[in-house]
Every structure is written in C-alpha cells, then in structure tokens.
Image (cartoon, rainbow, N blue to C red; front, side, top):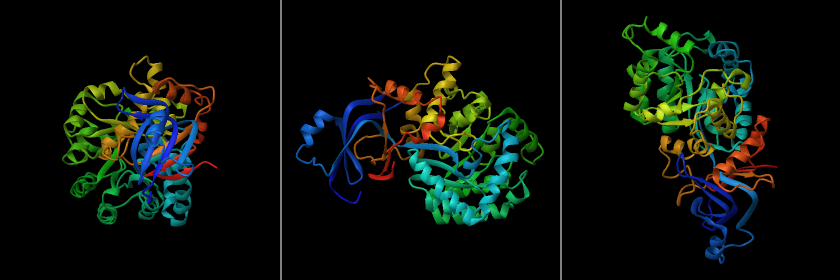
Length: 435
C-alpha cells in the first residue's frame, strides 16, 4: 500500500498462534498502515482508540465474515491443473498416463502463457498467496509462472534425466546449465526441483544441491509417497555405483545433498524410524498432502494416512500442501478438511481445524523463513489476509467452532470451497475481489 494512511477492517477474526491456539474476535478491528498490520483488537476497543482516524473512506465493514491470514500451499504443481480429477488407480500409472503427456504441452510458450494466466488468477481467488510450486521441465513455462504468480512463492522447473518419456528427458548438462541460469536470474525465488529420485540422476541432484545451497535457495522433491514407489526407487539405485548399499529412499537424498533446512519433501507417508532421525538431524521439512493421499473414492491416490504424531515425536517439521494435481482441489479449506476427516475416521486425536489452519499459515511461514513478516496478524507483519462470508445462522463462539462450521458446511460439494473467499489481500493490496 503506497499510502501512509490507516485502513480499518471490521469482521470476525481468526489469528493462528500455534497448533493449539488461535485468537478469536467475534467483532474485531484490523488496523493497517503502509501495507502492514498495526493492530488487531476487539472492535469496541478499536473504535474508542482510533475514532479520530476512522472515516467512511478508510473503514470497511465486512459484516458477518471470517477474516484470517491468507494461505500458504507448500506443495503444488501448477502445470497439473488439467489432471486434478483424472482417474488415479496408482501414482506411477497416473503419472505415465495423464500427468506426463499434459506437462509435455508446456513446451509451447503460448500454451503455457494461457494456462498460467488462468491458474494464478484462480490461486489468488482461493486465498493462496505463498508457498512452494513445481513447474514443468521447460524454461519458458518456469519464467511465465514467475511473471504471472502473485504472492511470495518459490518455484522450480522439475528436473528429469532418466526413466522419463523422451520428450520430458533432459541431459545432466542441460539440467545443471538451466539451474545455474535460473538461480542467477531469480535468486531465492528459484527452487531447485528434482522431480524425484526415479527421474533425476544422482549427479544432477548432487551438483544442483550444491548450487542451491550456495545461493540459499529452497530445494523440493517427493519422498516415500507409496510403497510401490519406494520399491522402484531402491531397485534403481542398487544398480548405481555408490548407492548399492542404500537402505532407504531418504538415504538416497542424504547422499545427494538434497536434505537440509531449506529442503521440502513432499508426502513422506511411509518412513521408518531411521529416516525420521535423518530428517530431524538435517532439519528437513515434510509437506503433507492429505487430499492427494486420500482414498481413491475421495479423488486421491490412495497412498495412505500421514502419521503426523510420529513426525512430531521425532521433531520433524511439517506443513500442508494441496499437491495439485494429485490433489483434486486447490482450496486449502479442502486440504484442512481432509486432514481432520481422515484422522477422525481412524480415531486419531489432535487433528483439529486450528492445527490445520496453523499448518498452512504461521507454521508454513516459519518453514519458509518468513514468519517475521508473514503468517498471522502480529504487529508489523504484512497485511496478508482473506475474507470469507459466513452464513447468517453460523454464530461461532471460538476459533475451532468457526472453522468447523465453515468447512463442514461445504464438505458434501467440495468444489464449492473454491468459491468461498470473497477477498484476498497481499501486502495491504487486494489482489482478488469476488464480482
């Protein structure tokens, strides 16, 4: 916000503090100046404190609407938007049959441009303003995504050098040359992105990891999503010199320098205790994608239930992602719903709506190293928030109830989650307003 004047927003506020605490204001006032949060307080107190500054021009009453921090999506593939709801009998078959042929189309700049304009507008409309994104192998598609995205994202072109379709296979030299070029051009906005150990050679992962670490870029890939994937990975690497004795998928990433405090491992469902210790030791983060890993009847890949309690016991950090297009819908409300529902069905306690919200707001900001200026409504943080109108009969008494009633109201028609947000604000500017 260029102006130094105050802006005031009234509504029902949720302010995540931790997995178990979320401030709730049934009538709150958010005070913004120069695109930053100056205060969040009960409306009556705010009116008393700021009455001289508040005018019709600088005050917006959002009425019976929830206002909460805008979302982080820590694992998604913008180039997979068209395969979100394709049949998913198994991960590897889904990739081969639908995903790879779709990603091939992004070699054409005009196609990528058209798709990017649509996708990133939709991302803003869903209330997502930060996170980690996968592009296709193509330089053009990556640059177009960088130009079109609105928010604080790291984006990487997937690297594929083996066991890949001919039209999606790069040489080691091509991958490393492009990595150097993109790091030089985009700095820490670039995310080093081997697709996964099946498709990316140890040489590219090792040399590319060093380049990324030197530039302080994030690294992202996939880890232990399905047992079949793990078996395939180990069968490949046992034949590669230097990797004959590897015992686990995670060990492969350790040997290639892929683990570390800026490393984001998608899925991490089927991990043994030694792998968890390795992830903790290297300060590597796991990104949980509940809608993607959900049963096939729920439009997921049926990969299994993520054991968040095991990760927390092992002190491994984790956050939430939609995994578009393994996940069928872009809304983080749907992701939170799936996280809660899957654990409830298995009678696992602790998977609350507050925890889900925290894991795609403040906890994600902490992982991205941006928590000093993003993730919740703490004073002097960026004014990044979404507005979600509530039905008049929903009168929440606390944060958990507010989220539950909001999310449960749409669970039988999940596509509706994508239309719930009326406004998305990034750094004090509205990047989406519902017409």
